[in-house]
Image 1: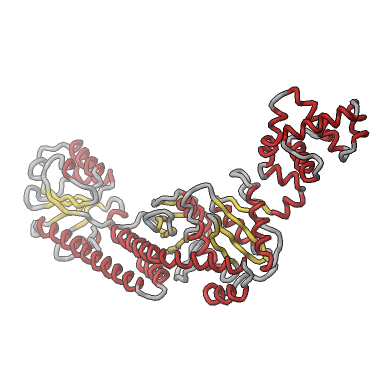
Image 2: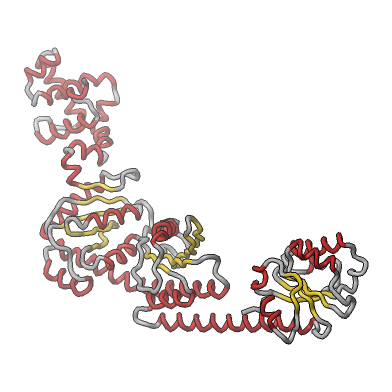
Length: 509
């Protein structure tokens, strides 16, 4: 390690004496340099953190106590750690006014004997710095080699994280592309109070969708987080706990780990693509009823398929390149055999056992996608489950991204139609009657007629018109709408359209 005032004074070969102790903390500060100068103000050429040496030959004789005090103040402002004053050259003793100024300002003052050349002190400090830098370089290279060796292990990703933790002496955590914590056995646990803030920070980084880093320093939690992966979608986030900024060697090591993790994850993309196609093929087998073949394949690869009764979830996103499949792959691996998913027609179909959909829905909500889920079905009813989930998905919006078909069914068919955009369809159907205010009597006529179940006499009495007038208006409305109101299907369609636009008698108040 670099030398300090303490180690300099303890070195008998230098024979230094402490005249003013000053701030005790400064005695253990690493010295960044040692240099000599007899200028009245050398500070423009000084960096912070060093030991200034002088014999006072050029200015001490004529300097007043006030000038010596200003000299000490300037050194402190330049963040000089200590002043070394040589005796036996220009001065037999250290000027009392200088000692007084150092005592007043708390600047350590060392007496350098005539027998100790400044160059001996300067070389002592520079040799210590060089030795420390060499040790740091060797330690950094050793750490880099250890991380590279760890990357070659079968569990390379986890091995390099464990090695990183060991080398940095702090906790590390990794989050996958879904923002979930990767289970890595390490020697240091993430502090309980840090888990929440670090997880939230990791998910915010991932939500940006581009490479980046963030320094977390709040509420007693200090950590550095960096994304893994150099193109969308991101593959995860690495979090490193620390009490301060990492030194250069530590930062280089973290960069190496991120690069190795990124390479490992990028190389897995080809495998991910193959697995994705396999999943889609298994889904088609399940839809065709070849459950035994699909289950045996899934059992060999992912631990089997979820148990009946099942809930089917269909998810979609309005953003291109949303990366949900990559996130779900990691998520499904963590919940071995409890989630099956596949891509179909640009959407993601996820199948879980009933109850386990509560694993999937919060995950999908965090992923900023829209999703609909079915009621309980068997594998033999997978197509029905997908249909229910798709219908629930059709009712979602950006403000209400999740919907469950059983809840929609409980609220009625018209509510479902309204939430699925049925009002726009109703407007299109009734447009020939809505364009002309004069056709309002036709709308009233068909509305009242349908409310009376197609019975002419009660409907005409309710409207206060002759039954033949009512027949004529209903016939005209049917022709303008292109509907055959003798057919029950067309009557039901017209009633639903009127109800969605609140044009039925019961809604008129």
